[in-house]
Amino acid sequence: MKTKVLTFVLLILLAGGCGYAGSSPPPPQMSEVERLRSDFPVYPGFAPIPNDFRMAAPHVASLSSSFKSDAPLDDVRRFYVEKLASDGWKLAGDRKLTEWGGDVGGHLLEFRRGEYRITIEKGGSNNDDWDYGINFRWEK
Figure (cartoon, helix red, strand yellow):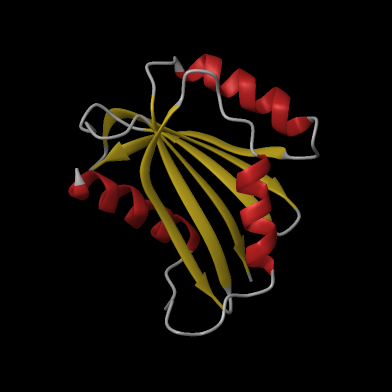
């Protein structure tokens, strides 16, 4: 389980650029990232997995949550495009995820609003611990 969680966290860090998250105080934008996560509409049938990840540094604020669900990606995509668009979010990316060039069934949706980003990842066939991962992020 830890390996899959670490894979998800590493993917989020690589997608947004790695940074040192030392003992610096979190940026003021962290409170907005926390608000985004607390106000986020959770897809019906998503069961949260208690392995949230938090990263804060002067140039980045990021929170991630994971869920179990057998919901089809098309239904999840439709739900979030509708819910987030009504709140000013734009779908900025919609792509398959591959591993060493091979399709493993993973998918990434990316929404943007100003300096903030929400990514929703559908885990691939080699993923047992979570089905969907959601990341809320601000990056300078």
